[in-house]
Image 1 (cartoon, rainbow, N blue to C red):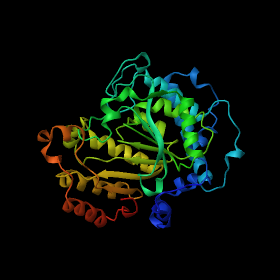
Image 2: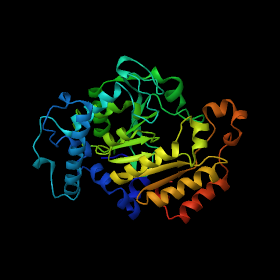
Image 3: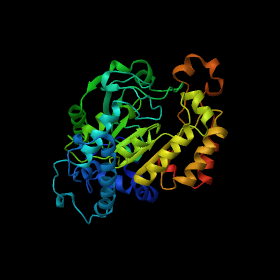
Image 4: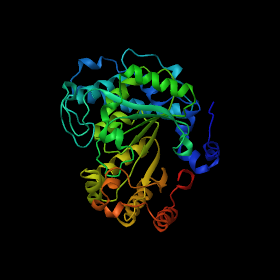
Length: 369
């Protein structure tokens, strides 16, 4: 099915640590199990979500979440097939979509919690209204080996302001130069990517979080089985994490900073460590995960070391990509005198220190780094 350009996309599955940590994703990727969004579509909501207020929707969501997680072990083990469940009139996914659109009227998809009415065109940090903007969608061969080829969808905009952003053209400067897509169109993009060999659908950007409503809604129209991958800075709100945890099959989060000061200085976000670690715990407890950490020059002590230590203590089941690809981009490249600490690539000693610490902590990093 997959015409791969990278041999490691095959051989990585011979690694015991990879198969153990990505077992659910592997089964969905091979169509041996249904993706989580398909399970959500089989869970009966027993009422029309549109008739409930937001508090009622969240109460219903909580009860349906319990139903989902009671069914999931049976489906994961192969003891229950989706064919054994009836097709309900209103389902768990419908409830998630209804909540997401209600949240859009006072947006709190991310921890900026701008509370603007995006349905009426008001703009917060992400600068998006109600529309989702896609800049490109294609088979990506540069991702981690278990993901290749990845059906990658690049959304415009971001809720971070990283001064070194490598995708600044779509995340910061030309956010609106992509195409507006509705949920049905987004579903068709995913179907084509899967049918042509994608192992997963990789929601990325920019940042996918501001597009949550359209992404969830697209899953109501998606007619192929395909793992859903959330490639994010993980500055999501708790409400967003609740909506995602039953539809995301594999998480691909960034864990950039080991302290709030660096995060505020380089990405203009507050309370970074507490928010991201909270969300990483939720993701780790609800699905397979590959955590990315970008090693930056002069930030091994303040960022790399605390990040890797935290992962070793709280996310032992995750694969970890210790990334050495940092290079000065965007504002750092334009104004290196303003950012002297990160105005170069990491040196070999810094990369060696990061790898040595990952080894010392017992992290499973080699297959994906």
